Each structure stands twice: as structure tokens, then as C-alpha cells.
Amino acid sequence: MSDNTLANYLSATRFPYIIDNSMDEYYSIIFSKIKDNISVNFGISPEIYNVYSLYRQCEIIKIGNDISIIYDRYLGETFHLMSKILMLPHENERAFGLCCKLLSEAYRRNGKFKEALPIACVAHDFIGEIYIDDNDKSFIITRKYLQKYFHNHSSSEIIFECNFADIHLVTVISESFAVLHEISHFLFKEKLIETYIKDHTEECEQIIDEDYSIFTYLLTGEDRLKSSTSFDSDFSRQNLLEETICDNLALELTISIFKNDFSSDQIAIAILLNSYHLIWLKHIDQLACNSEKKSAFSSLIKRANSIGKLLEKKLLKNEIDSHLIIQFSSIISQYNYVFFEKINSVFELHNDSKLTEKCDLIFGEYINKDFIDASIIIDSLIGWNTYKGDVTENKKNGA
Image (cartoon, rainbow, N blue to C red; front, side, top):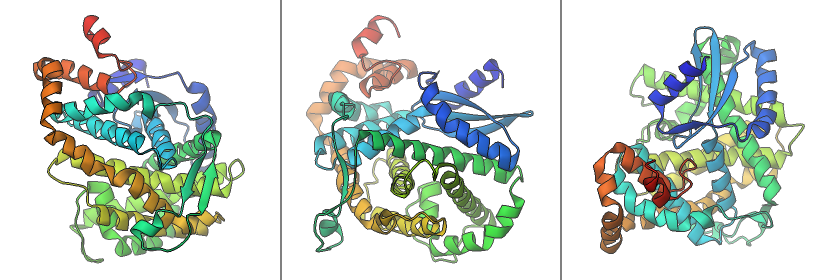
């Protein structure tokens, strides 16, 4: 793909963005393993481009005979932040700050700058804490929160503990899984895995029939329960079948590529957290589209619990022998404590008249002026890398 073609495509699909080469060495290690595997097994050799934007998109596109993976490294950065903060459950203010940042980003992507402003202002106060140096910290998953959410009387034993370097490894696996999932969609659409599809269709259809409402939520964000045999259309079912088959293939590829380099615990926790992070990010995006809709904790927990059961089957089938596979309820309960509980408090910021008045007084003229000015203000407040979080300097320089 030519530079102009890439630039035109990115400009049409995400704004703002930057072509990012700052972590090429880091990503070359990940992507070289992925490229080698899919070249041998599927006969494709895509070029990989790293970009950085608030859209967190990983996608694979084909223009002519050129196949390209466009990876948004902000997806990996977000996974990394969420995994760290999840495993530091006592740092409540930091988790609250990250929730403000994520929701204000979602509003901004939807062009809702006025709704984003007060939450972005609060997020700005926490930026330093969100990105604080964690090199010397210990990160944990504990059974402690099961007692609160599942009325379990077990002890508060730690079931997973790691250091900062281990969090990086977990992020590597999570990012790889995300890339391989998109590659799997490409292989599916290009009819390059017909035998695999035939061999796994029956198994995946059973999964769909058991958990249709979960897949519907993940794909569309619609919060509704349906009977196990009720589908909107054959097209809807086909989409779910593709999603499930691609999930299966991505899981198998992730394990085959990294099982010799990572422990079973690292692979299990990375894939579980990848799924829960995506559930949470999808839910935040839906909340930003409909500000009147508050977080439904119980239904989210049920969905995450069901996803945990599905992943348990898949991981065990692929001979990932980790005690964490059957401990997903502990992960979910900690996830709820750290993230799910915070979002209603974040929504309440809209009702803080002093905060909204102060934000409007300082930034109102820019938010109301035009799309570019509003984007710069919100991006600066939430610490997006292009502006380095410095509102005043950017306005002075006419950025």
C-alpha cells in the first residue's frame, strides 16, 4: 500500500491519528511471529502499519493485491492500563480517573464534546496518577471480592500475582490475540479456511445457541435477552457464526504461536482479560451513545461469567493447563469492584453544576466554536499523546 493510499484511508476512518514508529522494535517481535505463522499456514504476507489514535482499531484491509494490517497501538496501551489498574484493586481513585478518561474518549469519538467536557476535566486531574510509574508494584487477582458479589465465604487468598514485567507479557498476548482475531476474519471472508469452517461449524453453532444474548451484546451493544433459538435473521446468525469461528481460530493461533514462550497462566489471564476489557470498552461506547442508560451491573456480570465459561472450554480444549481457567469468577468479581461500580459515579459528574459551569467558563468558547477546536480541547484534557495534555500551549501555538 502506498503512503498516500494509507494516509487517505486513515483520514477517512479516524481523526486525529498519527503514524507511530516509536515502538517498532517492541511490535516487530510480536508481529514477526504472527507473520511467520500465517505465511506458512495460510499463504499470506501482510504488511503491518502502526498508528496511534483514539479509535483503538485493529483491522486488516486488501487493496488490489496488497494486504495490510493497520494496528492502533492505543488499543494495546489501553489493555495495559486496564490490566494494571484491575490488578491494583485498592487504588480506587486511579480506577475512577481511568473510567473518566475512557468515557470522555467515547463521547469525543461520538462528537459529543459538551458531554465529554466535564468528565474530561476530571480525567485531566488524574492523568499523572493514571500513568504513574508502577515498576516496583505487585499486581494481584484475589478471591476477596467473591464474598461481596457471589456471597462466597472463601478466604481472600491471592490466586494470581505478578510484577510489572509480567503485565507487559500479558499485554503482548492480549494484543496478539486481537490481531489474530482480525486476521481470522480476513481468512474467513477470503475463503482461505474453508476446511476449518466446515470442521468447527457444528461446535460453534452450539455455542451460539447457548449464549446468543451475550454475542448480540458484544457485537451490537443491545441489552436484551432472547431465547436460545430466537434470531433476527439468517444474516444475524451468520455474523455470529463467523465471529465465533474467528474467535476459536484466533485462540488456537495465539496458543500455538506463544505456548513455548509464555506460561499457561500468562496465556489464560491474557485471553480472559482481553475478553473482559473488550466487554467493558464496548459497554462504555454504548453508554456514550445513550447517556440516559446507566450501567447494568448484574447483567454485565452474568455476561462476563458466561464468557468465562466459554473461554474455559476453549482453553482446556487447547491444553492450556492453568488454575486461572476455573477461577474466572474471581477475576469477574474483582473487575466489577474496580471498574463496573465506578461508571455511575462518573455519570453523576454531569449533575455537578459547579463543575459544568467552571468547565464551560474556561473552555466553553472553544467547545462551541468548531469541531477542530473542540477536538483539541478534549484530546488535550484526556492526555492524548499528540497534544501531551497541555491545553494552554497548544492554543497559544494555534494547534
